[in-house]
Image (cartoon, rainbow over all chains, first blue to last red; front, side, top):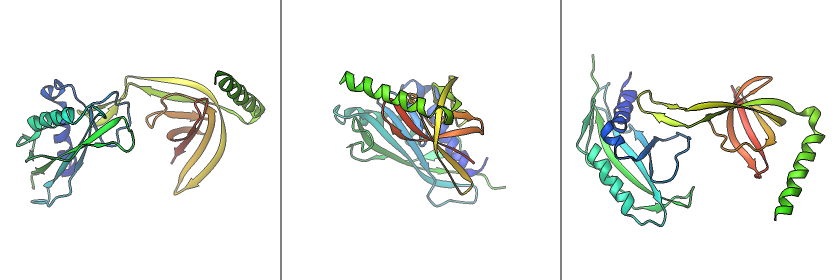
Length: 131
Length: 112
């Protein structure tokens, strides 16, 4: 497995832990087209666009779109962002280290008007091993 | 409103009857209960159900070695990218739902 897949599977591992599953937040990768059910749910993208430390390393940002019901106000999305922080911020998973998160303002989703969407992002570095 | 719905249903049925010699019976393979398996990194499904439907191929096109067909058919709810259709020419992937009147659909399928 190469550096991009390794970093991606470290992110998958976070969402596959028992502790995260107990949060009961439906979480899907981007381009997953299955039925997501009622909000809240999350859609994430791993963007390995940062500078690498060596040939086996990557860095970048994990983008998470937090979808909640439009009309419920910003509280649910911010509570979910706090939950994401609990599982990601300053954590090391496999060979991937997550740093400090940030979040953008909440907006009405353009594709589905019943949803509100807030971006949560957290930079990461994946430290691969060169042989 | 109900009368209009009945009228449309009847006309769609009539239109299909007139094209019976051009219709092809196909099998839609409908996958249900989609979820994402973080262990394997792949989508997973609870079940797969075959549904036999008559379709009318209204357009075939080819570009960059990908062949696309547009199928006119009675509506199947919840068709998505994970489903497929088996035609006489083999298995085709479900693409975009180009039109959905609530009674019938035009579905784009592709292979290649």
